[in-house]
Amino acid sequence: MKIRIVCIGKTTDAKINSLCEEYLKRLSHYARVEVEYLELKKKKLNESKVKLEEGKLILSKVEKGSTLILLDELGKEFNSEAYANFLQKCMNSSQKEIVFVVGGAYGFSEEVYKRANHKIALSKMTFTHQMVRLIFTEQLYRAFTILKGEKYHHN
Image (cartoon, rainbow, N blue to C red; front, top):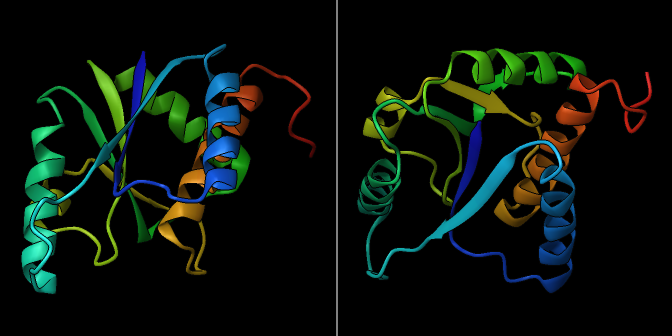
C-alpha cells in the first residue's frame, strides 16, 4: 500500500522539517510513504482564485482509484486508536493508494471537497500548516504502531 501526503507550500522551519523526516523514516518500516509539496506560481490572486488554482493542482495529483482524505478543520475527529482503525479500513478498501492532503491557508475548493472520500480533523484548535504536517506525520506513525501492537502508544 502506498500512502502519499500532498501539501500546499513547503515547510520552511528546519526544526519542523527535521522532525517530519524522522517520522517519515520511522514510517518506512510499515508502508511506502511519499510527501509531495505543491506551490502556485501565481502570487497575486484573491482567496477564491487561490482555492480554485490549488484545487486544480491537488486534483491533478490524485489518480482515479486513489482514496483522497483531506485534513480539514470540519472533518471527523478521532482518538489515536480509532484513527488507526480508520486507516486500516482505508488500506483494506483502497485500490491504488491513499492520498492525504494538507491544504493551503484558505482551505479547499468545492471540486476538491466533491472528490474527497473522507475529511479528518486533527483537533478543533487551529495549527499552522507546518505544524499540521508534523502532527499528522507523527499520528500516522502512531497509527501504524498501534496496528502492529507495538509499545509506542500507551493506553
